Image (tube, rainbow, N blue to C red; front, side, top):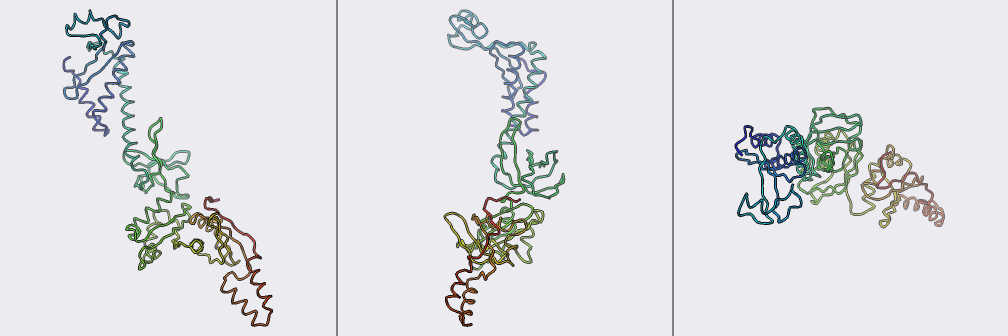
Length: 394
């Protein structure tokens, strides 16, 4: 077949370069689409193959028939006797190709090929996007805010693809504006019939973890380790840290001079409050730290049940609970313990209780009475707040 007036190979090469698609994959898709269109519209019962030379641009449409002794399907087979007249060297089981005249490429067939090619090209582009971002799941990227829809979803442009920020993955109260650039956590990339869906998040704890590494050198190089994060996006987070160097204060390193480091983190999160607390291998001390800024008393922990009962004096109760139960809820999530706060009107500190008992004895009170008062110290209390690690914000 002679060189065509229109060079399909050149046209496809330009499309491949413009769309960042593999040239050979696009040529293969074109060959398949034209073969399907020609079969459907011109030769519905025959086996059609299409070949496009990527160098010369020469296009061939071929009808393929198998050489057999006895023909059962004349559309797909040719008898050995007839085949030998065309090619003396042919044998049973071989295939023969019969070129189709260019004039038979009807307008309908070419139009159908164009439509199929467009579909294949979209599929190829979708695969490129999926493969590029599937490998980047779990990373934090900078994206440009593009638009929103009537369901409250925001869409951000990543470059080759577009990611969705559904309401549950947004920072409550944050105002996004088209054209602004924000950092997002790439949470999931999955294939759907309509193409790849890229799920992004601004509410995930791992975005906060990334920002801490970005702004705090000691966290980035591993001297200070972030042990746990509990976050209620847009409002408040608690971060438990530990230093592997006794000369480095983990809390001070995270906060920075005059709070400059932690402010850089919160600035990226819409001024979300971030509490930095000291992680401790001792469960009771860790729970005590997690409930700060409240000062609590006796802590009875049951590690096997992941439960803890914490005694709190009335003046510290509201602080321990926090607004809407937020402080105790975040502490529970941070430590992994269900925390039951119990109020007591008596002295909650053990040392203070001992001192009070000794004072009672010095005042001439009966030792047995003082001991009884001490034993009853934590018994006359009532439960005021309970939080478990998986509690959600009300």
